Image (cartoon, rainbow, N blue to C red; front, side, top):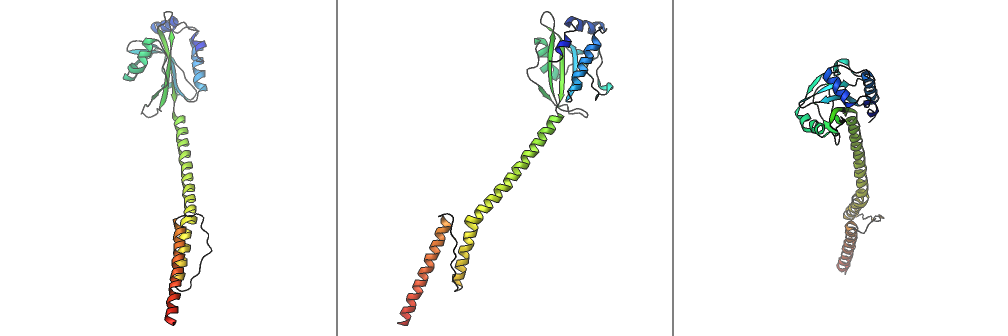
Length: 237
């Protein structure tokens, strides 16, 4: 949108006339400077250009160049670009309907020196409302991908920490509600079996199955003691 005040320096007919005549207008360099300025300010922008579209190809009016670009990679005035299947699917219909792209299109180039990008474009209309030229911008997703990877890594790290804390908490709970009570009960049974019974002062946190098992064990031990005492009395008699 920051380019529109500058594209009005050229009437749409003037842009088409430049391409068809092969001669640049007097204000051409000013428009190039503005395109270059916009690209320079956007560190993620790979491509920014103005073209005149035709049925099977478009002709470059200009391509913005930033200080980070090599001059050999910049399309020159008058260069022709033949449409690909992608252009026929997305770009050409918008040219024919004289409308901007509805949303950024994600494109994966898959080649060395190229990065995944978002592409958008908007038309410059003639006096009859038809497309005279198109402005297109390709925004590099490399930095966005790094941010996503970093965010994903941070989320994975946080989840790992939470998992470790959860396991630690579960172990603490199990240790205090299951493991330790069972050890206490086992120690009591062992001491009783060895003839040196020592009852523990452990207090159960919950009235659960382990506490009921402990109570049952104590009752059983008391009944065994009572039975032994009764048999001993009978034996004495």
